[in-house]
Amino acid sequence: MAEEMKQDILAKVNDPKDIRLLSLAELNRLAEEIREVMIETVSKRGGHLASSLGTVELTLALHYVFDTPRDRLVWDVGHQAYTHKIITGRKGSFDTLRQRGGISGFPKREESPYDTFDVGHSGTSISAAAGMAEALCLKGETFRIIAIIGDGAISAGMAFEGLNWVGDRKKNLIIILNDNEMCISPNVGALSSYLNRIMTGQTVSRIRAEVKTFLKSVPGIGEQMLKFSRQVEESLKTFFVPGAIFEELGFTYVGPLEGHRLDHLIQNLKNVRTLEGPILVHVVTQKGKGYKFAEDDPSRFHGIPPFDIDTGETVSAGGSPAPPSYTKVFGQTVVTLAEEDPRIVAITAAMSEGTGLDRFAGEFPSRFYDVGMAEQHGVTFAAGLATQGFIPIVAIYSTFMQRAYDQVIHDVCLQKLPVVLALDRGGFVGADGPTHHGLFDFAFLRTVPNLIVMAPKDENELQHMLKTAAGCGRPVSLRYPRGTGVGTPLDENPRAILVGKGEILFHPPGATAAVVAIGNCCHPALAAAGMLQAEGIPVRVINARFVKPLDAELLCGTARELKRIVTVEENALMGGFGSAVLELFAEKGIIGVSVRRLGIPDEFAPQATQKELRRMYGIDAEGIAAAVREMG
Ligand SMILES: Cc1ncc(C[n+]2csc(CCOP(=O)(O)OP(=O)(O)O)c2C)c(N)n1
Image (cartoon, rainbow, N blue to C red; front, side, top):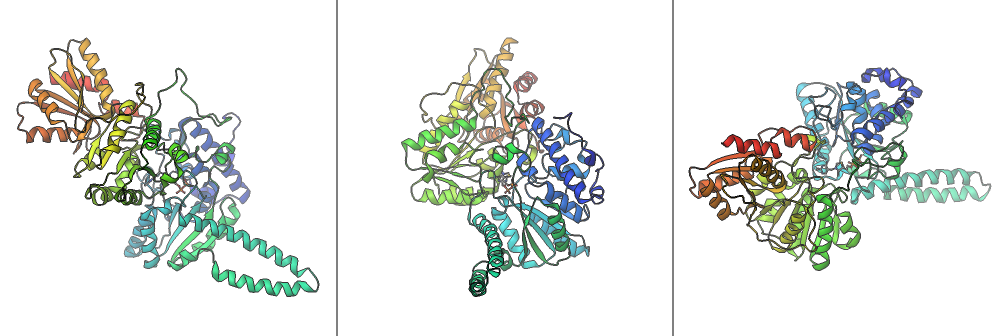
């Protein structure tokens, strides 16, 4: 495919100024060329293809009409901004998308003056744009601010808070609602149904117009019928005006616009540019537009690993079949547990496939809830269910659980409600980078009273821990990593383990140090011990299992005996697992023990593969072994 492509127009575009010189025909051709580049690059690098394919014309029209970078485009989530990247000076580096040292998959201020706000989590664009609008007034400047938000992201609580504010402040601010009726899966919620009715309403008015023309053409009775149809139309209008909800909130509503027609978009955006006050422009797009496989299955192409362009199939690494992913084992186990216990219900915040809950959704549709991109609501909703005797399992990626911190504290833990917080993507996520790494949950959750914090060493322990969590009658956080398991065979039935008890994984005679690991760091710790054993350095390896409650007896006993401890975690060091161990030792008056903590220092880890990051931060087998050697 690469050889066939010739991007003549794109070759001339280095900056949005260049596209403002193009004719409509050239702009349409440019859209095609951009799609080719996007498909080609994402097929090699992986990425958020479907969303970015859906915004090609919209992005071109925005840069064409507005004076960027003076006018500010504020993207929500930012996964749909590949066209924006390509035409704002990053065409040449687009091939490094999501790679270590390469350009980010999301807008990033340090990357370009065209990127006005760092993003990755949803629902921030309206508030950020509102802040810019206030600043503009304070500074007496006159540029335009345009927030671009999807129909999924606008369902986030924060987006509603922003709308509420903007509609009231009456400052100049344009919100583009990019409506493709999809989140990752089909969108849910009352607002989504409302938007859908607007579109259906449009179809109705078009049909009505056609009927009118027809009636006029009927001699005699036609006029009479037309009169009647006008009356019906009037009553329909009061019943349904497109965008009325936004008008009531203080916005001028414009739309729905056809999001893949550049002429239509450009003309309407030029008009919008002249309007004052808060404006909401409703643009209808198609997720995956222009690439058949993505149009047919936009969910799969939302975030896709490398794939074959001709077949749309993801490229497998080959060799022997990989062990199941943690996500898959989690999804299977929830189903197993739910079969035994009718109190178990499951909740996702718009990520049923990503969290593996799609299987549960299929088996127990009435006990499954997709609350939309609304983590805060999801957690408190779970707390409500728990007050009525249910056992909610809320599956949210570690990074997105940050959104629901107060809900965890105030609504779940304060009331000791038995809610299971299943934190997928704990640790490094890889190419999505710093906005998405799950590196803080041990630290921010272990300080919350009543909460048990655990992490399994492998996929088999994950199923046992999930059984433990669902059965213990307490709030629990259970975090596990992105990616495949380590290949440990799965026991047939999940069984509960003892809360607060760790295990010794390797107990060589004559050990002079212990590596105390948590979660997915246990297997690298074992590998390190194997390497050290071969060098004549016997090291004990402990799987702590719990960040809280810690196994005080095991850990303090080991420290007193061996005097040298290395802790390992895929989490921020500050306040994390190693800190918990140090606090325990201080509390128990353990002295004369040297402790070395391995984990992530006080910085945001960059984008790179998980393997590269583990190497970089010294928490892979080599890094752990080196730390033990250095202790002497
Ligand atoms: C707080 C938060 N929760 C979940 C996600 C994961 N996520 C990324 S994009 C997306 C769907 C976005 O839907 P929409 O806003 O409609 O944009 P589209 O991809 O359809 O263009 C989700 C759930 C996120 N980025 N941030």
